[in-house]
Picture 1 (cartoon, rainbow, N blue to C red):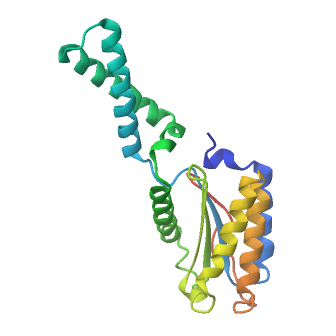
Picture 2 (picture 1 turned 30 degrees about the vertical axis):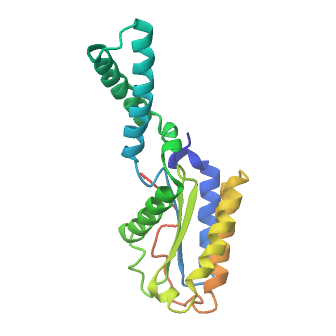
Picture 3 (picture 1 turned 90 degrees about the vertical axis):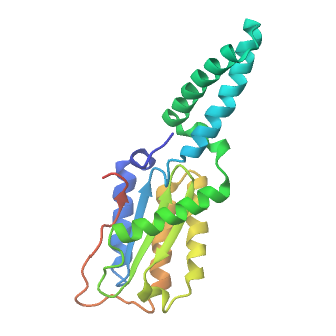
Length: 211
């Protein structure tokens, strides 16, 4: 399974940084793409998956041993439960069938909101930070803008950027998709936030989770 570190090649990372720099040469908006391996660890999925597979395996083992009493079933179940729970934690892709889309969406929204503040996007001079948050495990994208922008630009416009980046990633062109999203963000805010003569690059042009 891909992680934040393997989602983009070094060449693709460099291309995105250059794209952000070009976009920010036209607007005082600070656009930050961020790649996260996942937005949450989903421990409940490991527990549910471990219990289900542990139960099925313990029942099958008891039948094979022709021992259906609890003194055989309970140790088998507990051993299998811990084994499968460990496997689910070690191989996160196994958790996916046990995680609802609603739960993933909520976790991605919360993680994007947290990242926005952790990385200081709310501390730009004119409150013009824009975060394009991509969570690899959930295959999900969120776009958040600071108050200065949202006071003048309808927050619903970011849905267009989310759809654009998501479609490009699904098509197997993540770097192109992110660059298109960055360019579109700049187009949406440049009217209200043109570049200033004393503008500085206040935020990173790309954040890879863990770096």
